[in-house]
Image (cartoon, rainbow, N blue to C red; front, side, top):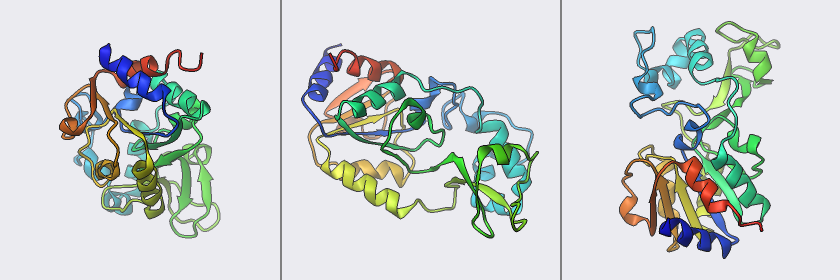
Length: 246
């Protein structure tokens, strides 16, 4: 509790906080992570392919129907709602304290909670586009197809605007994330194993002395943290923000 109170005081005194989060931020909402024992990569699927390969650029190009079917069955989860971590971050932004959320998640839960400045490093499952003519589509259009989704304008293959294995991250997003992190007074890193690059490398651009790492399991950067809090990010963020606007 002492560390929670120390970090709470830092947050109370700062108007330049940046949050960097991963899959653990959404697990309390019922979204499976990728790498834990119960995560997507350890879940049995009825395919001869590994989940990593099924979420790759190669697999999408060669098996667009199977790719979309896998996305629908494993990534597009109905009925998920923001949890206390998403809400706490949205509240910090409303208070003028949080400058931005940098997320590796593709579930849009930060926006649903009310966060405005969200950098989605790995894209999202809200937006879709035709790989031939570039026409944009929404989720409702995609859900009207059983598997392979085709464009109503040119017949091309439609895909989600997410970054697949074998694809590069959007450079504008990276540049913006680096600039936010480099200028941050407090950097809170939460719910991420910090093993997925290049995203995990972004925290190296933080120049301050208030690096807060919140995670259930150890990360490769724990030794660099000025404040290390082991625990469930949804509970910890809730505690950190509780009562700040009074």
